[in-house]
Image 1 (cartoon, rainbow over the protein chains, first blue to last red):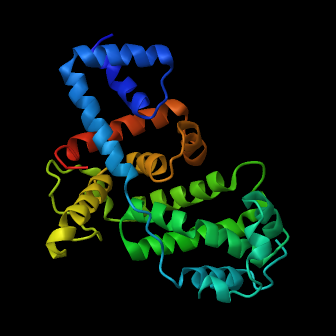
Image 2 (image 1 turned 90 degrees about the vertical axis):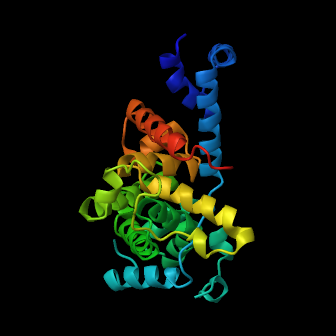
Length: 80
Length: 200
């Protein structure tokens, strides 16, 4: 297995989408290849940063605006 | 409007599944629709915000998403409501970005992360010292996401803000699995390089 092949596998690896055999192969490569090891560490860090982002909500008036727009277009609130 | 003051209360609606609520929407029940909005407003707003990066535009897109869902409710059948509404929101975001002049900044990936970009994120310079790291980090991450081409940005947002599987992203985006993987992997390779050096 060369670095080019490992490249995509690193992504499925951080997404936990590899089977046991692939996992062993990736880990064997990573132990031997400092380039891919560094790549995996960076990728893992980027993924952690993405996963840590806070969920942001809309303003308090949002529901009212949505319902107003719905009722404006469909005053009976029904008959679709 | 606060949740508690909405007429009819939420007790009956809160126990229903999304799909049951949609069936009731199809019968014209606004209370069922209200519950769906309450359940999904944060997620839909957040998806739009991560895509367009401006609060006001994100709210408009989120509002448009729910309006579109209400109008199209008769066409909903046999899939998860979340996939259906994420798809509506995703399409509206991509349409918006296609129309918007801002796309120039998104499509030309600047070589440096501090390249000037119009954005509405926390300004780390304005934060007090103790809060700097966290705010700065969030700003850097948002900026890096914003610098991705929209079609890459969408798969990253769906994967990491919504924890969707590859297959769920296919459903939401109407893309084949190979394309989803290619876009996700390329996007994350760009982010990996841009976020290199930041402390997580």
